[in-house]
Length: 224
Image (cartoon, rainbow, N blue to C red; front, side):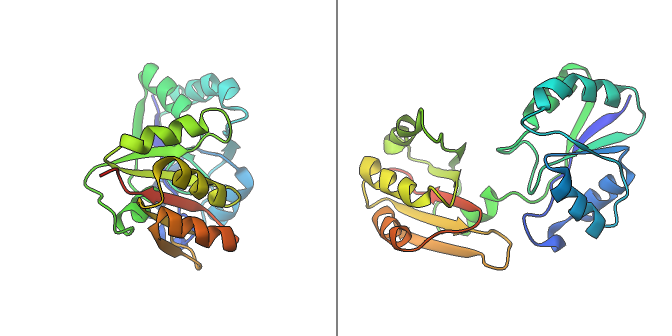
């Protein structure tokens, strides 16, 4: 019986691929990818020849049983990757892992790149206890989620779209107050990586005046 291995891929800097991840990808019977075009370019740069198949949020419910069946019929391993970072963190993957575990398959997850940890540890905010919130809801439930943090004493880490970051910071200021410390991190591990640190009010003013681009992680200090 085969196994499923979750393989983290670089967020931006190709040098962040691990030797173990490279070995797993090169020896995989199949690599399942969130976007075969993005992963195809990466595999070409890494000189990986393994077959590539799509597994993303639009087809995962339909394909999960077929993928588990395919893995169970082999003696080797199948790899799951996301566009960047660790599979299953705010992208497709959970359903496949759950189904593979339920089917008695071996599931492994390699350590490697993920945006939330570098953002947290370099933010200057406490990182001994924290909560990760993924992406905020775009509409329904968004305000409710933010209001929950009014009494959250742990550091809060979440992802946000560059198109919504200015709005997000205004909402944080409105519901939590402008004095809470925060850090907005852009483009982790990429050429234009930046850390903007300050109070929520200061950051709200900055991003109201400056257009944001790239992948964003927000680190919010806990309540006093």
